[in-house]
Length: 144
Length: 182
Image 1: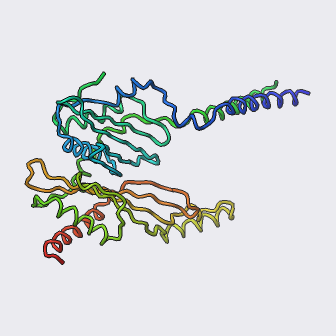
Image 2: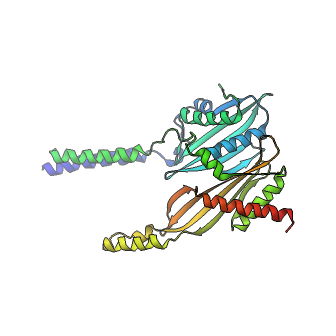
């Protein structure tokens, strides 16, 4: 009697698990973000006082190389650079895009993935912009 | 519910949490490592020419010389990406695996975990130096290794100096050959 009670307890826990897990379709997971769109943009974007897009892209490339990234793709028209980095057994991929903002500034936006999760930590992006600033000799400005 | 019952439920709970909890992202992986300056010196060379086109065509040529096929390029930014598949079987590793399999009386097949093939990727950036008088070349290599059961067993950035040395020796030759139109 005691034994059957015990097993029914475990059974309930397992059932609950399946019920909870069954609700979510995995398609939605691909479009999920934990942070709001505005917050993400603000942590991933900085403005720089320069209009030389090519030079900015070359600096982004060398900064990424300094951070052990291998550049996979780049496109001058689109202003995009994509690279990947192997850290222990995880693959980190990162895309940076450079576009103009008004007459005097360029916007740099980066987003990174660590394995299968999106990086949504402001400090990590700040690290990248700190390195980029150093290579550019320019100050990165926070964009609202 | 007895004491053991509690323990069982506890373990099921922990198991659930550990599956749901997933991997956390480590902090600071976009900070330059202590070795980044050293790596840069390893990966970079400068040539006394302003002709970036000449250098980038030589780079493409040298990658072909080394058996790579081109995957991607953006000449405006001086980027060439190439890759090559190669054998990764190591006799020593297989011998060790056979010994381990024998020791486990065939319960675990260690040979299936041995390296089988690898894909090496090279990414080259050609840029003029800050004052514009020289042309810099920076190459980075990484490789993906598959095991005998065709699973990815390892991914790594290649930092062996001799690999980079070999590339630049070949590149210097190629630049010479291009100049002489051979």
